[in-house]
Image (cartoon, rainbow, N blue to C red):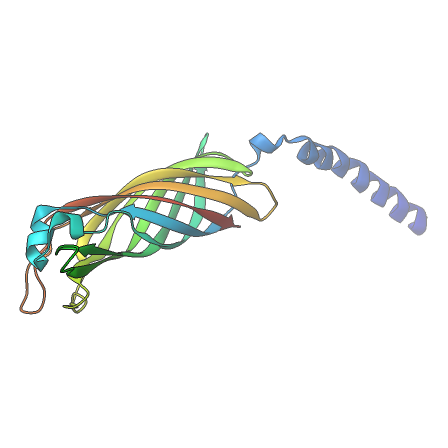
Amino acid sequence: MSNRFRVYSAALVTFALLPISAAAQDVPPEKLPIGKYVVDARVTFPRFKQDQAIADAIGVGTLNLPTRGFGLVFGAHWYPLRVGFMTLGVGGEWVRARRSKTLNTGTEEAPVKVTTNTRFSTLAPQISFNFGSRDGYSYISGGIGGANYTAERADKPLPDPESGSKTINYGGGARWFAKKHLAFAFDLRFYAVNPQLATATRPGYPRMTLLAMSAGVAIR
């Protein structure tokens, strides 16, 4: 009787779990929730300003200033809460980009080549609102952090600022998972950087808003 009881019990448990297992398997991919976390690595292309105030601050013309930067973005995000069709995310991103430009400010007979370097970096937490499912979702996000912006002549390099300027970032993007753990990631973001005041070793820079487009991979 004991062995039969064990066999009957195992059979009953198996039959009881079958509907649950079948229901889990029948959930379509578009209904599965977004994973608990994701890590991003993207290439970014921020658009730098050819601003007269910036050019005057370092003694060059606006055409001397680079326009399209190149850099990297690394981010990590956690998704603790789902409400209906929206998932709340918290995380942050680190960005670093730069670009150089050389321009002849003289003549063909007497060239005077001036090289200007522009660099930008920021580190900021973010809150995101995500819409979609496990294998593909879009988001809008934003946060407040600090950023460092420097435009300088190569022959007159400047030290890094002692502290970052308050910067608000906002934008959106999407992630598409072609594989279980790997996705293509795209982001379009604005960085509103507060003015940087002049110091004994650095010129001042005006308030600016930089637009950056980035693309890369996401891992979950």
